[in-house]
Amino acid sequence: MVPSLTPSAAAKADLRKQLRARRNAFVAGLTLDQRTELQTKLTDIIWPWAKHASVIAGYAARGSEIDPQMLLWHAGNALITTACPAFASATSPMVFRSGTCAEDCPVGGVQPPHHATVVEPDLILVPLLAADRHGNRIGQGGGHYDRALPKLRDQGAKIIGIGWAMQLLDEPLVPDSWDVRLDAFASPDGLLEFS
Image (cartoon, rainbow, N blue to C red; front, side, top):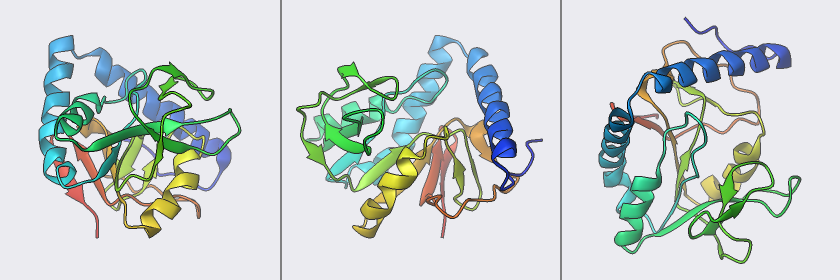
């Protein structure tokens, strides 16, 4: 059982550590074929939402994160603009740039080139460590998404947290005041919409 999130920063850091270890252990138990099959199922589950979007934002998966690249590939083939998070520097705000992740990102991983067009997605696939059944999520702890999402939500963007099925918790997460709720959580097992 994963403990409920408390307002304590130390408790939140400990919870992140537990959730990351749990996700890592789950993915370590998958073969490459199983992982690919699950990510294909995720694509099939999200596609009904994605096919009507103008701009879809995903991300370049790291470590044990579920990878949305197959969905982004399908979207690109359907002439839907795709984008990923990008940063000018480690302290700059996160924006979404169109195109393929092809350069190092100042906050880790890779991102689209700095000259790629900044876009405002209307469907955003958000990585996470866990989500609960009320639309609360816990991310990596950088706060990048929580700072970028309110403006996009105000413009009508839909926010879907994506992960492995085991990342959906029955236990509630207690959000901080700045945490942005999800519109849905999608995994290879299905999509859960939040009211």
